[in-house]
Amino acid sequence: IVSNPLPVTILNLKGQLNGDNAELTWQTASEFNSSYFSIQRSINGISFNTIGKIKASGNSSTLQNYLYNDSNVVSLNAGTVYYRLKETDVDGATAQSNIISIDIKKFGWNLSVNQNPVKDLLKVRLDNLYGNTDVLLIDLAGRKLSRQQVNASGNEVLNFNTHNLSAGLYIIRVTNKGLTKNLKFLKE
Image (cartoon, rainbow, N blue to C red; front, side, top):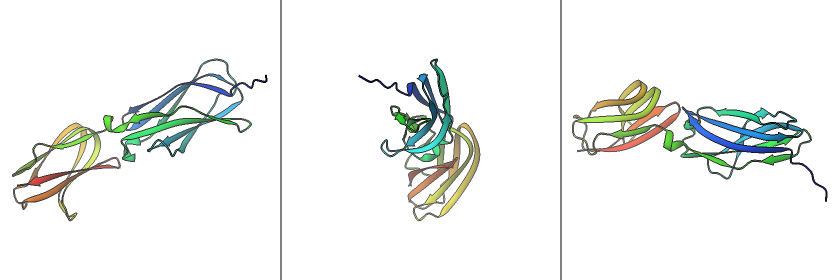
């Protein structure tokens, strides 16, 4: 029986959201002629694209720690983002890690209104939101009726006067760091 050692033993691939970035960490228990790790991402858990590379230690029999930050992952407008590693040896052989997922919607910011339907004053609540934010009040035809820009610092409440609006459906559109969320509300 001929036994070829595995080029790398990957341990503990983990991911977490750190602000707007996905922080991936992993360890290797041993490495033999390893060249680099390709970090691969998917928004459907099936089709993966390489988004970065990290140089491997090469040859090691001690625990090695690795870190990769996927910048501004919340701007992907995905509820869940999937990651895996592809390790490549110096001779071109490859091996893949397990797949992990990060639930972005669980950690992202939220948009809500104080009441729906609304009469004369619409209060828009923005939770867990930071940085330059554009808030638009638009009609269903896409016309901009009102706009507020704010440098959000966590939780914000914005007021929109709706007294002069006709009865019907309207949209609040919030854009922050490339991510846009819409919320419909009814004016009585």
